[in-house]
Amino acid sequence: MTTVAEIAQQIVTKNGVTDADTPNPEESPARRLVLVPASKIRIRPVRWLWDTTPPDAPPTSHGRIPLNSLSLAAGGPGLGKSQFGIWLSAKITTGQLPGQLYGKPHSVIYAASEDSWSYTIAPRLLAAGADMERVFRVDVKDDEKMHARLSLPVDISLLGKAAEMYSVALVVADPLLSLLDSGINDYRATEVRSALEPLVAAADRHGFTVLGLAHFTKAGTADPLSRVSGSGAFGQLIRALIAFAKRENDDGDEEFVMSLEKNNLGRVGLPGHLYAIQPVTVETEEGPAHISRFALGPETSASVRDVMRDEGTVSAVDRAERTEAADWLEDYLTSADTAGEAEPRDVQNAANKAGITPNALRDAKKKLGVKSYKPKGVTNAAWVWRLPGYAPDVPVGDTPEVA
Image 1 (cartoon, rainbow, N blue to C red):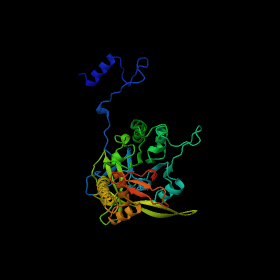
Image 2 (image 1 turned 90 degrees about the vertical axis):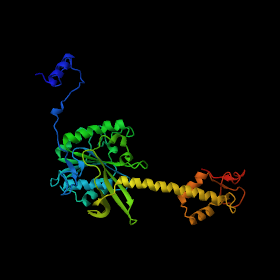
Image 3 (image 1 turned 60 degrees about the vertical axis):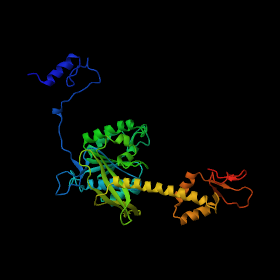
Image 4 (image 1 turned 45 degrees about the horizontal axis):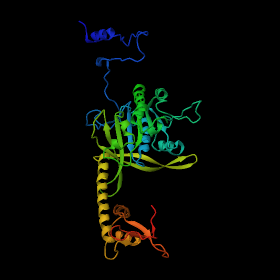
C-alpha cells in the first residue's frame, strides 16, 4: 500500500522538486522547503534550571526558568536585577539551585556592559558564595577592532562553542539589549528578533540557558511584560519573565517583591517571593569593598502585577489630589483678600496649611493658567501670581515670568 509520504514525494518529484536528502545539484535551487513529518520530531519533557516545587506537589509543577531557553529578569532601576543574576550564577556554580542541575555544579558566562568587574561584579560574586573559577567574563579579540565586545548576533556561534567547551549552563546578559550589534535599532521589534532568534536556537543546540536583564519603562499598564523596554521583540521569544518591584507593606515599611509573570512552558500564578538587598563588606587585597547582595525571602501571595495595579490606583488618587488643589487655588485667588493675585510665598504657605503638596500646587497653577509677573519700576518687587479672567492681564511694562 502506498503511504501518504510516498504520494507526497511523487507529487513534489513530478513538479520538479527533489527530496532534501538526495538533492540534484543541477536542478535544486539554493533555497528550498524541507517538510518534516511530526512522527520524526523527538518529544522531550520540559526540564527546569530553577524549580521550586515543594515536596508535597506534583514533580516540576513549580518550574520557574526552563533549561536551554531565553528568560528575562525585568524591573525598574535599583530593584536588584543584577544582584539576582549574581545570586543565580552563584547557586549554579555551586550546584545549590533547586532544579535539574541541583548537586551538579556548572559554569556561567556573565556578559555585563554597564557594571565594573573589579568594583562590582566580582565582589558581588564573592559575597554571594560563587565558585569564582566557574564564572567567566567574556572578552572578544578581533585583529581588526581594537575595542571589540560581545555582539549579537555576530558572536552567537562563538558563544555556543565556548559554552560547550566550558560546560556552561547559564549566560547572563546584563542588560540584554546592550549586547545587540550597534547596527541594530533596538526600537524596531523585527530587528531585535532577528538578532535574538539565533541566540534562542543556539541555547537549545548547545545546552545553555540565557537570562537577559531588562529595564521597565517609566509608564504603562499593569502588565509587566508590556512595561519591558523592547517588549515588542521579547513577547514570543522569551519562555519566562521574572519581574521585580518595590512596595509599601501593611506596616508602612518598604519591601521588595519578585514574581513569575510569564511562563510559557509551565504553570502561571505561582507564588511570588519577597527578597532583600543586603549591604555586605568583602575583604580585598587593597582593603574592604562595600557592595550589596540579593537574599531570597519567603513566598508571598503578592505579585509585581499587583504592585503595578496598586501604583495605578495611587496615580488615580494623585490625580484627584491635583484636581482638589486646582479648586483650592482658584478659591484662594478669587477671595476678597487676594482679588485675583497674590505673592507665591503667601500662596505656598496657605497651601501648606490646607494640606496641598508642592507638586499638586505646581500642577494646579499650570492647569488654571496662572501667570507669574514682577511689577516694573518697583524696587525689590516680588513676583506675583495672577489668575487670568479674574484679575486684569499683566500690565504693560511689567515683567512676565519667562518659561
